[in-house]
Image (tube, rainbow, N blue to C red):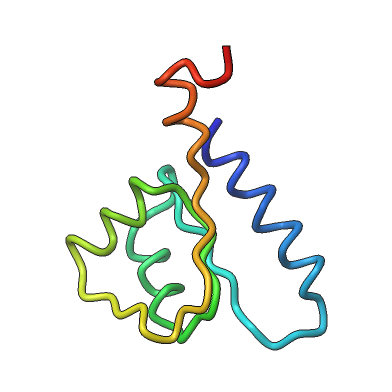
Length: 86
């Protein structure tokens, strides 16, 4: 479920940014890490993803986020675990 919401955010961000020259990598569980790592390393300005996958990429791989302008995190899974949405 968490990856679905992040994917929807990514899709809408791409629609809103249509015509602008920036990349928006989606980093979520369920997709292979090498592909996501490659996307993040391509000088991106905005990242959409889940906290656990972003932490995984940051802790296990050499990633620099110096040029990243914004990170959008999907925290619905954490909210559900803590009964935020009951």
